[in-house]
Image (cartoon, rainbow, N blue to C red; front, top):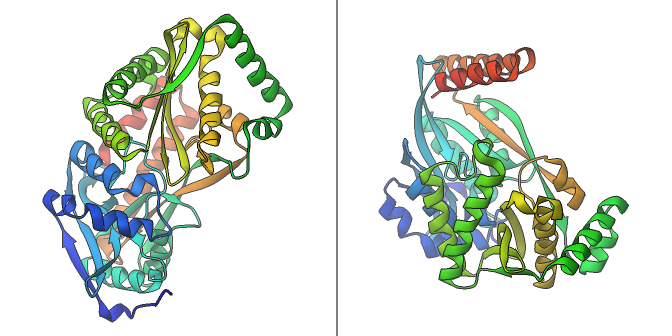
Length: 390
């Protein structure tokens, strides 16, 4: 039975050092499992590796909420300092996991049944501190952070919401591979079946997950090489040493936890494609892929995706999430999607209202440049304006 808690009986703690984050692993994941936000991108493992490798320029600022000794909530935040329009200094609180790493469904982690009391306690803390909140990659319409934003807006904070991308997903509950194929569009279904048959006739086809540390290391190196061959500088998935170090550590941990789904597609013993994902709480998250352009005519990217979905069904996954991005190919496989959103909240001060208007002007300039100017020129202006915000 879930009992609600009086906000006045809650105590709040601040964690500002990596040692404090490290000490929270067991409590963190127990709380996450008891929350409505439970997901890969809010695990201690994902966010602690993010903090180690990708938190440059930020200061840790976790808020823990306890009812007695029981941990009932974590606001997994960090402080970031920057300048708007190159002039106005801004100090904001952002979620751990923010940025190009691609975390989806970020949120405040709250034990079920305690949401209202926790929101009231956090709203009081944030109002007292008056630090701007910049909360990205929220699951629109299904996050505690959105409700907290509404509470703060009711207290005079100025909200600014920016619709985000969508996350296409496949409901696999009760599905077999054959039933799933039968639900695809006729043209795509025929293409998948034909490509699988053709590849199986022409090659000894193998689609194998990394099961050992040596296999993980080899498969990840292959993924990075194939991804670079396919996308080059057009992708920001693995484009910095910090991102590559993050994935090296994360994939090692995920293998140990049983979450890693890093597949290699081989044709006659030659690696042709790799697909990188995770299966956490029966949700398969497709993260990235790569393939050798030499095998492009065999549609090895399509084969890898189809075989990964088949593998997810066979292991009993209830969902296959293609994560954020509205690329057309994702909707060949998935017919449902979730929307993401970003909410910025400015404290009720004159200075913060000026900051809000300055950021909105900068973003309007970027949108106008993209609409009116040739792509290379627009890109240079967009980058310059974005740098003015940092």
